[in-house]
Length: 578
Image 1 (cartoon, rainbow, N blue to C red):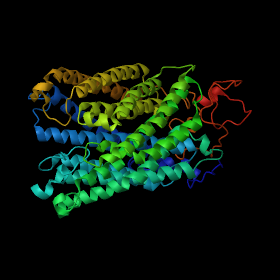
Image 2 (tube, rainbow, N blue to C red):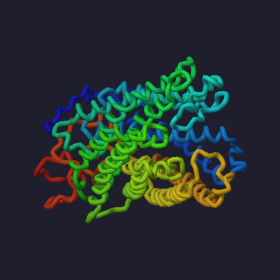
Image 3 (cartoon, helix red, strand yellow):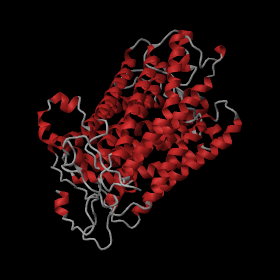
Image 4 (cartoon, one colour):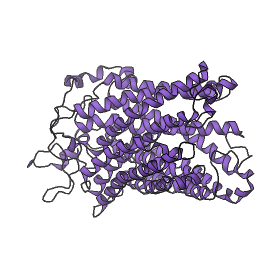
C-alpha cells in the first residue's frame, strides 16, 4: 500500500488564536471535530435517558399489568405501542449511531490518522445540527394530538400507513421526518469520515497501519452510505401515502405493503453492522492495550471487516421469513445469514487469541470490553438459530427475538461505548475517572443485563408472543409471568446501575486527577498529543513508522512503542506518558 500524504488546510498558527473565539463559536457552533464529538455524546446521553425511561414503563407493564406505574400512572394499549415504537427508534437511531459514529468517529478518526481536523469541518458541524433538529422533531412528536408514532420502530405498513383511512396523525408524520433528517445527518458525516480517513492520513500511515477502529468506522460509513438510499425513498413514499393520498403501499390502489419491509430491512440489517463495527473497533483498541499484546491477525481482521460489510447487503430477508414473501427465497437468505457469522466469528476469536498469554490488567475499560465480547457471543449464537427459516418461523413472533436482538446490540453499544468512554475520557477531558465507581458500574450493569434478557429467551421458548400489551390474559402463558417479573426487576436495577457512571463522569470532570498524555501506555497517535488536545491537533504533522499494536516486542526496552517512534530511536517512557 502506498503512503498517503497528509493534506491539511488548517493553519497551525490558529493554536495561538484559539482563545480569541467566543463561547458560542468555540463550544456551540464549533467546527472543531473534538467539540462536535462531545456534542454528539451529549445528545446521545440525553436521548438515552428518554429511551431508557420508556423501557422501564414497558417492562413494568409486562410484569405487573393493570397496575399504576410509579412515577407515571397506568398506561393503555395505544400508549404501550407508542412506547415500544419510540424506545426502539431512539435507542437504535438516536443513541447508538450518535455515540459510536458521531462521538467516537468524530473524535478519533482525525487524531488516529494524524490529521488536524475532519476534511470538511463546516459540513461536520452541519451534520450535528441536522441530527439535533431530527431529535427535536422526534421529541416534539410526544406532544402532538393523538401522541407519537405507534406502529413499531420498524414502521410496518399498513399500521404506519393508515392515516389515509383514519385521518392524518402527526405523530407518525413527525417520526418519518425525524428519521429522514437523521439519515441526512449521517450521510454528511459518512462522506466526511471517508474523505478524512483515506485522504488526510499523515506520512507513513499506510492503510495497513490504520488502527482497527478507523477501519471499522470507515466500513460502517460505506455500508450506511450504500444502504440508506432505498429507505429514504421509502420514507418519502410513506409520507406521501399519509398526506397526499398516494398508494405506494396500499393493495386497493395497486401498491404493495411488503415493499416497505424490503426497503426497511435492506437498510435495517446493514444498520446493525453500522452500529456493531464501531463498537467492535473500540474493543479492539482496548483489548491489546490492557493485554499488552499485539492484535492477533491484524490483516485477517481487516479483511473480515470488509467481508462483513459486503455480506450485510444480502441478508436482509431473514427478517421476513414469515412475511408472506416467496418461500423459495428462504434458503438463499438462510445461507447468507450463516455466512455473515463467519467474519464476526473471526473477529471474536481474534480478540480471544489476543488475550491468550497476555499480561492482562482488568481496569474498567478492559472489563467493559470483555463484557461486550462475552455477551455478544450469546447474541451471535442465537442469531444462527434464527437464520434458519424453519426455526425462525416458530421463534420469530416470540420474546426469543427480543432477547437475541438485545444481546446483539447492547454489547456493542453500551459495553463497547462505556469501554470507549472510560478509555478515552482522559484524552477527551484531561482527567482520570474514579476506578472504584467504574468497577461498581461494570459489575452491576453486567449482572443486571443478563438478569433482564436470559429470562426472555426462556419466555420466548415457552411460546410467549412479543408485541402483546398484556400477556397475563393468556391462560396458557400465565406460568411464564414470574420470568417477566424477574426481567423487570433486572431492568430496574440496570437503569439504576447507570447512577454510579453519571456521578463518576461529572465528578471526574470537575475533580478527577489530571491525566497524563498517555496514561494507558498505548501506541496510536491520539496518545502523542496533549490531554485534552489543542486545535489544531498536532504542533507539527506526525510521521508514522510502525503498526498500531506493537506491544511487548521482543528485545524492546519497554512493552509499548508509539507509532511515531522511528526505528532504533530510544523510547523515553516518562516523556511519552507525560
